[in-house]
Image 1 (cartoon, rainbow, N blue to C red):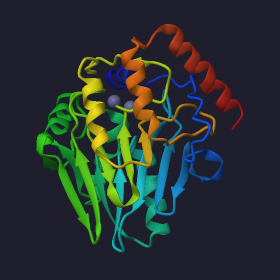
Image 2 (image 1 turned 180 degrees about the vertical axis):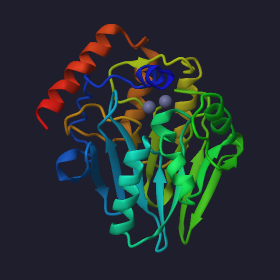
Image 3 (image 1 turned 30 degrees about the vertical axis):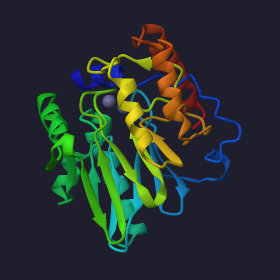
Length: 277
Ligand SMILES: [Zn+2]
Ligand SMILES: [Zn+2]
C-alpha cells in the first residue's frame, strides 16, 4: 500500500504535454523506437544512448542505458524487478555481455525498483549516502556502492567520464543528476519536470528546488532526460529547456497536490492508451 501511495504521490501527471520548442532538434520523429518487452520501450536518442520508457504502473517513467566504453554499459535507474530482468536480458544480447554499472538518482521506487535484481547479479549500484538511508527508511533496496552526496562521484570508463552530481534538495532531499560530458547529456531525473505543474510529493523541497536547478547550469548540455515522459504519446522532448521550464513552473507557483481530478485524468489517459495497444 505504501508503494502504491508513494507512487501516486511521486509520479507527476502525464496529461499535460509540453509543446516542445518548435526549433528543438531533440525531437522525436528521428529517433529509433522499439519495444523490448510488454510496456518497455527503448528510444535511441544518440548512437550510444538508449532511453528506456517503462509504460506500466501509475505513470510511465524513464531510465537510461549508455554504451559508455568497450567493456561497459551505464544503467541509470530501474523501475521494477521484472522489467529490469527484461532490460538486462536485452542489453546482454545486444551488447554481447558487456559489464553493467548502475546508478540510482534518488530513493523512490521508480529509480531503485530493480536494485534487488541488479545486486543479485553482481552489478554495482552507485547511490549517495542520502539515497541509501532514505531507501532503507522507506523499505526500498538501497544502492550498494555509496558515496557522500556532497562530494558526488565521478566514474571513469576508458576515456569517458560520468559525473554524479548532487545539486541540493528538489523533488526529494537526495536527488542527484548524471552528467556525461562527451555526450553533453544530463540525466536530470525527477527534479526536471516536463508537465504543466510541479507536484508537491511529501518529500519535495519546493523552496530549495529553484536553487538546485540553477546549479545545473554549470554543465554544457545539449540533451536532458527527465524522470518521466510528458505524455504517453511519442511527442518526446529531451531539450535542455526542460530545466528552464521547471524553473518557470516553480517561479510562477504552478505547484500543487496530486488531486483526485489529476488521478482521474491519468486513469483516463492510461485506459485510452491500453485500449489502443
Ligand atoms: Zn521520486
Ligand atoms: Zn519519479
